Every structure is written in C-alpha cells, then in structure tokens.
Length: 512
Image 1 (tube, helix red, strand yellow):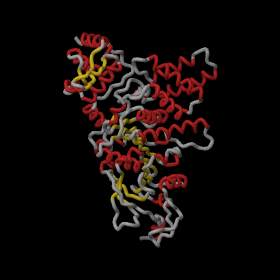
Image 2 (cartoon, rainbow, N blue to C red):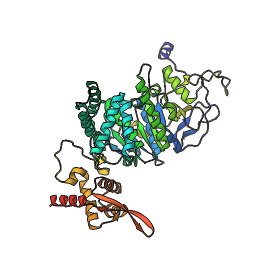
Image 3 (cartoon, one colour):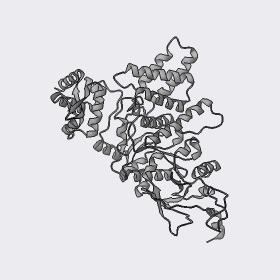
Image 4 (cartoon, rainbow, N blue to C red):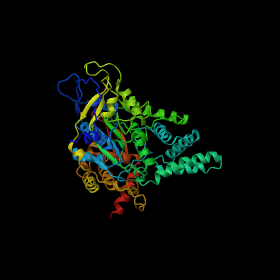
C-alpha cells in the first residue's frame, strides 16, 4: 500500500480512556459492554423495566443511529407489556410493525385527539395544564394568559353537555377581542393568541387536533401506538408533542412511555437574553417530568444535541444513552450527566495515565454509546445490538393503510361533509351504528352491566370500543349509570334516558 495514500486517509485512534463497566441485572437487553477494564470478555447489558418510568434520553450520533437505538428500546420494552405512544415526523418508527404485530400506526390525519377533552381529569384540573402548554410554546404575556384562561372557562361552560373543540376556543377568543370594553393593547394581545390557534387550525395536519376525539387518550396506550405527522410544520408538531404530555398527565393510565423525537421542540433550553417570563414558563417542564414519574409514566426523548434540552430537565431523565458528540458544550453536558472524569489518574491500567472519559465521546463508532442507568453512579461504553428489521425499509403507506383497515378501522375525519340526518349520527359520526346497537340492547334489556353488554355484542364490536362508546353515550346523556346492590355486592348498570330513547327511534326510522 502506498504510504502517502494511507496517511492521506487518516487514522482515527480512540483516546486511552478508562471505564469501570459493572455487571448488572437487566430485563431489556441493549447490547454488550466494550473497553472494559475488569472483565476478560464483554458482558451483556441493558435496562430494568422499573427504569422506564424514570425517563430515557437518547442523544448524539446520526438520525439513523438514534432511530435504531430508540426502536431497540421500544421493542424490548414491548416484550414486558410496556407500551409506547409515539409521535413520528419521519415515518421511520412504523418499522416496529415488522417487529411487533400489535403495533398500531395512525398515518397523517387518520386520528383526532381533541386538545380540549379533559380525559380523566376535572375541567378545573385540566385548564391549568392547557394554559401551561400554550405558555411554554408561545411565551404568552400576563394579559394573554388571563384572556386564554377566561376563554377556556367560557367554552367549557357553554358546552356543558359536550366537549368543546379548538375551533370553539378560537371563536371564544374572537368574541373577547371584539368587545368594546377592551383597549387596543388588549385586543392586539388577544389577536396574537388567535393567530397562533388559527395557524394550528389551517395546518395541513389540523384534522389531527380539531374535532371530537376518535377515542379516549387512555386507549392509545393499550398497544404500541404511532401517530404520524409531517415534519414540515414545527408550529404544529411542537403543539402535538406537548399535547401528548398534558394528556398523559390528565389520564389515569400507567405503565407506558411517551416517545418524543426532536425533543428540543418542547424542552428547549434557555439562552442568555431570553425573556424572564419565558424562563418562568419553562419551569413548568420540570413539574411535568416529575409528575409523569410519580404516575409511573415514562418520558423517552431523543435529540441530536444534549445542549438543546432544558438544563433542569436533563438530570430528571435518569437513563442516558449518548452516541458520538463533537462540540465541547455537548460533551460537557453529557459528561456531567454520566459522571465522567477527564483528567483524573487512571485506576486499573498503567498504560492509561488519565481517564479521558469525556474525550472518548468524540471517538465513538456507529452503534457505540456511553450508557448510564438510574442505579449506577457513572456511565460506561456499550455496543448496541440492533435489530435486523431496523435496517430495512419501513412499510409503505399502502401496507399501513391496509393493515389499519383490517385491525383498527380508521376514523374518517372530514370537516366539510354534510351534517348527518339523525342526532345519533351527528354526535357519534362513524360510530353511530355501533352506538345504536348498544342503545337497542338497553331498550330491550334495561339495567345491563358493561360486562353483559360486552358479552352480548362482542361478536360485532370490539370490547374496547364498546367500553369507549358506553362512556361517550353517558357523556352525551343517551344513557345513565347507577349502582345496583345485588347479593351484598354493588355493580354499575346502564339504562336509556329519554333522550336515548328518542335518538334510537329517530335512527331506526331513518334506516327504514
């Protein structure tokens, strides 16, 4: 070989770093330790299931490398019935379908999550969460926060027997801004919020957030679930990602994780010169993360550069996986979290006079990372074992569409279609047929429990959907629920209301 040619290509040599790689129990296999000082052979390493709710951060390296690492963790977690709810802007996470057939993929605009649906929380608990989301994303002034809070309360009062939508909130703000009692300054500030909401509503992805929820948020966590949106509209994607977090805080479901890629869209770091108000709003982020951990809901974030993530949030995400980093600021941020030393004397090897652990981050190869988990004092290098389907092409749009139609009939959201003719069709849209079956059953057999209803209709309708429709029908006052005492035990039974009887009669007549 020509020496000059060899020298021109360069020779990359890792620094003489020294790490102590412990032998630990794990449930989720990630890979093997490398560069060990205390083992003759590399040993397997991974995470415990109980680490997942304490947060996971994957950073550094290339986008493909982070994708592969994230998919590895998500798939391994599914083996232990730990589900993930994922927002995907690159259509890469759908590869999980090849690994786990239970994975649900909702392509762009095939599902709706109503931001104003309070889920399992009360309205008084939910309004502050929504307000915090808008404050973090849009850096609201005090007056804007007050006006938005007033508008939220007014729409919930106006739609007492139904759930308002984002469009209803916009209309309430327009009413506020047109009041003659408002000063020009007040109107100008309210119009700023209106513009922000309008931008969401005119987005190509707006059907995903404007309308009635396709299903309760908790139902999205019963399987690994991917919600796909386009990455072009950062205004929209940051809102949807933040919405996933406050929905989780408002839902009683536990033992799942929310995955957020490009997490800096939500957890953006504060830089010198930012407004004091924005610094105050960012403090809500630490409260969100701590609350999720307390609820046993994991937060799995991914970012290209760790320095982009809000400083106080980083240590709250207790499992860290750092691929190759280049800038000194990123290396210092990662080193502090991993507990790395740079110039301390070597311990196990006479060949290594200094630890050089931080510098080691610059020389990581593809698939290598420095790994730290909550029960260990410092991080250490590992080689991640990637899954074969991860390197393959993701399923096509047509494959996903066919699968979605087979397993989970899509909710056709068309905001411009003509208004259905019956009350039941207007309120339940595509679910009106199944809702009518429930009403018909209760018409013929009053005072049935949810178990009896499921057993009676399970051949025609999925049990999960029946339970969802029961809650929806109760919310819309088509049915009522009461406690019945039987053999010293209590059970909840359902019966039709007058409104339900009228709606069923109208629906049946329209079909004959």
